[in-house]
Image: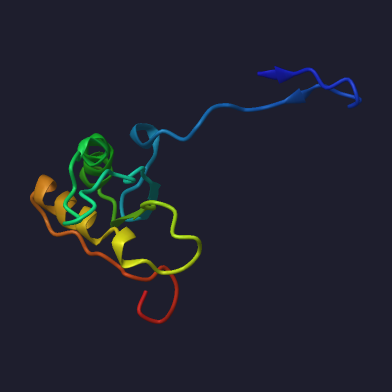
Length: 117
């Protein structure tokens, strides 16, 4: 795709091709995958009320594992915690539900940096 940018000497060319897991050799590698697990939860119980976003990510996660990925590391967020820890916005219930839906263990890391990670 070419973007018209009259202030530039040459046209700005953008490559809109994205990596496709089906065409990528992931055998023996760690795969970092951004997923949208911002799922609705019951305000009182914290129970996930609609798991469609989790279900929608499973085929891609399974494909990476089936292609021999050493690990699939999933990144997501839940709500808008304003840069502070907020237990009501933890992705732990999502990890539990993902494990149930996939029929295999899913390891939840409560932190994204530090010695524990």
